[in-house]
Figure: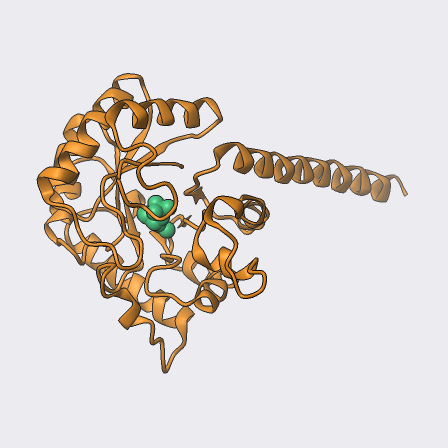
Length: 280
Ligand code: PMM
């Protein structure tokens, strides 16, 4: 899933694709680089961000979705708002990526239920201006807490009429999480897979990678984290994560090509080993 943030203020690429034309061009580039789908967002969720007006968010995403959908792209809309989700589906999006998992605007679940769209429910505790106050995962720890809170969201999603077969779950890296929380979650994704839905993971350019690569106490700048991210992508693919939300599609495709090559050669080696064993 290639990211197209049509925002002036996203932490990773804010302002770079803020016009319809620039966003559409960027989306086309990501598709040419091998993205299977694009995630179009009009609200920055970086820590501390304030929310755009609904009209602003609509103006940002709808024309981009319409143009890319007309060109045949599979699109998701990154929004927490029912009105924006509805307009995006009307314009041709097929997936609603709701970072709040239905908590910010529960009516979004009704919009998705009334369509045949897929729904991404991310782990979330509060809007970006307050999420730093919600990083306490005692007493159960971050993995058990996120699992429980996602299971609750899944229940609400199903109760609204969206079948589980249309739902992806997301641990919400960086959302009300300290760096070590993100690593704990990444190391225990099988606990989230147990909930019975495919997983989407968004680690691209996030600050926990900047902290990991810090030098002299200074985090690695946002646009110099792609090598670490590519390594992580490979590990996540090996662990069976179904959807990766990324800025750097080319680096991600390269990492996935390595995983595929290892898998197929593994398979060949296993087969010839079995044949030898049978012959023997
Ligand atoms: N992260 C961001 C925005 N939307 N959606 C999902 N499902 N998962 C994420 O981790 C996620 C998201 C923030 O990152 P960005 O500003 O680089 O888009």
